[in-house]
Structure formats: structure tokens, C-alpha cells
Amino acid sequence: MTTYKIALLPGDGIGPEQTQATCAVLEAVEKKIGLHLKITELEGGDGCLEKNGVALPDSTIEAIRNSDVCLKGPVGESAAEVVVRLRLMFDLYVNLRPVKTYPNVPSIKPNIDFVIVRENTEDLYKGLEFMVNPDSAVALRVITRGGSKRIAEFAFNLARQREKKLTAVHKSNIMQMTDGLFSETVRTVAKNYPDVKYSESYVDAAAMQLIKSPQTFDVILTPNLFGDILSDEAAQLVGGLGMTPGANIGKDFALFEPVHGSAPDIAGKQIANPSSMILASHLMFNWLGRTRRDELCSYAAEAVDRALVKTLRDGILTPDLGGNKKTYEVGAAVAERIQPKKG
Image 1 (cartoon, helix red, strand yellow):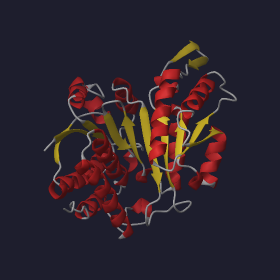
Image 2 (cartoon, rainbow, N blue to C red):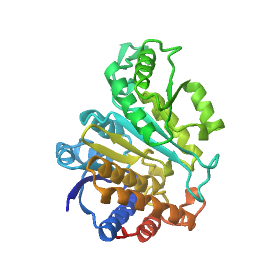
Image 3 (cartoon, one colour):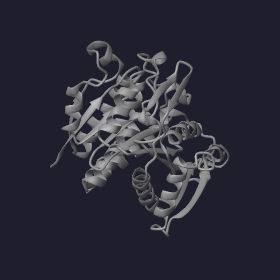
Image 4 (cartoon, one colour):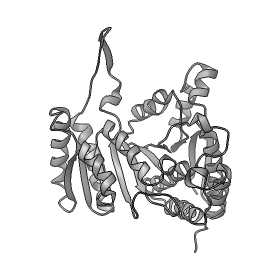
């Protein structure tokens, strides 16, 4: 049986608590489902920067490079030096952020289930900024045809697996060259997917529509910056950032994480919602199942999601969701509800 090597970065703030809860779930997956996982805990983030003078040591990068996948907790002020650097280093051009209602979790509307596909390596997040003079700064926005084409192809293929509906979000009426290139490229790709219902929306209109009628969306495709903003807005529709995981996916490697920050104000109190990181592990197993054609990994992904659903339905909730359970108690409850594969 295959042993999957998982590089684990607990991160900062509430990250170690979320990691503790998630590791309980991973242990249950090993014991009850029979997956073999070799988990290596690595340094990275604010604590590492303070201790070692660098937020992402070469030893951590090398360990990640030698792993099958990376799972990380939230990082604090050094996030750009950790996750943004890893996205660029491993060419993780897809940022996938599912948005879904769960039982007993406050939601603006019922039955929300869509996913934001965000280009992950271009746009203003290239970090190409400079001072023109002491009173003026400039940032360069990079959008390429190749980058737009490959993220569009990923999004359309995903749409085919879902409700066959895709909305491209941009602002080409204002940024006519950058977003113009993005939208033009997406339209060209759309011609190869006649079975997918394709539409476009300006980002301001899409932001409004997310509040008004979130159920109308299935797959949202957008450049990097707009995707970051819209996904945080979307998280608030379904109970907040504590319920939203993210995937960073490249050709041969992927990194999974909560989409929120390290919340230092509540660190160490065991009141953080671990669902975002548990759901990140769900995405991790789903990706391994799909890319490695491993049915056991695919089942593990389903089992983690079902166990979390049952935990929430049973009223085992952290304070942000109206409950009084500790972070580790939620993790233990999800682990307890992992079901073995029948047959």
C-alpha cells in the first residue's frame, strides 16, 4: 500500500490548535480507513522568523519538495514570505475555495454550494511594487494569456464535474488591457466547452450578487486579487472564515490550508474553529484520490466531510458558531465519527 508523505506546517496563532484537532482526524483516517500517512511537522511562519531569522527555511522547502502534499495552518505577518512564496516556487497556479452551507452553521441563505477558482501566481500578487518618488508608489499588475488559459481550463473542467455552469468575474471595462486579456482568453477557452453554461460579471456586480443570490453561482473564475477579496466575502455567507478551506494546486503538487489568518487575539484559548483546517484535509484527500487514482483517498475525503457534517449536526460547535466546545473537542468528535470503508 502507498504511504503518502505529508509536509505539515502548524503555522502561527491558532494554527497549532487547529493542527492538533486536524491531526486527530488524520489519525482516525489512518486507523479506520487504512491509509498510510507519514506526517512530518515543519517550521515556518512568524515564530520561525523570530527564532531563525527566516520565515521559510531551506530545510522546510526541501522537506516540502520531497513530500506528496503539504498541509499548513494559518501564518501571521510573514504569510507573504511563506504561502505566497510557496505558490510561486511550486507554480501552484490554482487557488480553489469551496463555499458551502453546513448544518447548525449560520448562513445568509440555505443550500449555498459554489466554488471560487482564483488564478494564484499572477496579478498584483507578483509583488512588483516600487517608489517613483517619496510621495508616489506604483504596483505592476501582471496578467498573461498563458496564465489565464490554464486557469480557465481548470475551471471549465471543474464545472463539467459540477453543475456545468461557470461565471468569469473581471473588470475589463476599466482595466481594458489586463482584464481585457483575461476575459478574451477565457472566452476563447469557453468555445471548447459548449456543454458548460458560460457567463461574465464585473467584480462589483458579482460582489453584490454574492449577497443577493449566492445560490445562482456554481463555479466562479477570477484573477488573483478579485478572487482573494470575493472568497473572504463568500466565507461570511456560510458561517465565516472558520468554515472555509483553500487549496493551492499545481501540475504535480498541492498545498492545502485554512483561508483565514492566525487570529493571535484568541491563540492558546482553544476556542478557534478547526473546521477550516479539517476541511482542508478533506480537499487534500480528494486531490490525492483524483491525481493518484486512489479510491481509498477519495473515500477518506468523503468520510472526513461526512464526519464533520455529523459533528455539526450533533451540535458540537465552537463559540464562533454559537457553541461552547473547545477546538480539540471538535477535532476529537470528527475523528470519532470517521467511518471505515465497507466491503
